[in-house]
Length: 89
Image (cartoon, rainbow, N blue to C red; front, side, top):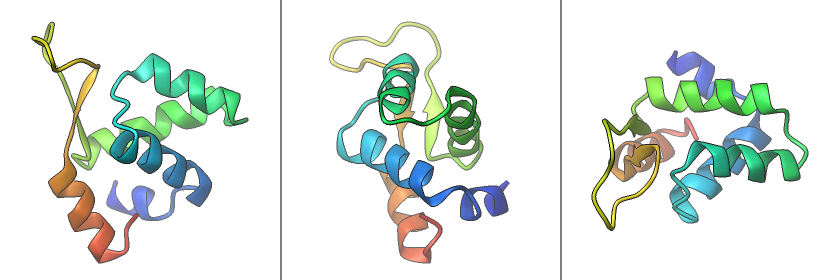
């Protein structure tokens, strides 16, 4: 699945990286809404989120998260920086 991350559409990958890691959006529905407003296909974003999840860039939350943590997944900055340095993102 790492190859799928490396070969992912660069625009989609950049959009998700900016939305998740810079803007800290961790709610799937909000990401999908922002993506469709930018002209991306919903299925393409769902697939890309699955790839991010499989490669541990994000991790699904289990149950309701206590405040101030909110969202559908946790963001892994460590994995993001590691992949960024290696040129995967």
